[in-house]
Length: 148
Image (tube, rainbow, N blue to C red; front, side, top):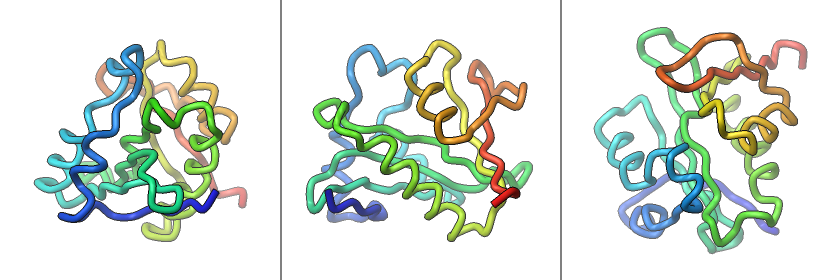
């Protein structure tokens, strides 16, 4: 694997917008097209394509919540045709490093649908823990990096 994160540009946005999760996962995440549009109109959010060499395998969006200054990994998905290949764990590690480098943060927030057990297990295995807050219908999790 030769993994990289690339910002969304006019050259790659369509390729990334076409990536989808499985039908059973669609209720857990907004479409990439919606997320790319959101980051285009809300400059505090950054859209990224996740690549293995030159093959787009996933998407992520991170940024700053302007209301409270928290740093969020707001969207993260691996295309259905590339799931089960180990990309999620590898890219989560790369994304956390990128977010920390970009924002100089000691905590990263995300939210999950309570019934999305796969996502919960993935994030917990990486050190994210529920903080008891809700973001609408979603449970907020935080990765505390102050110990590193």
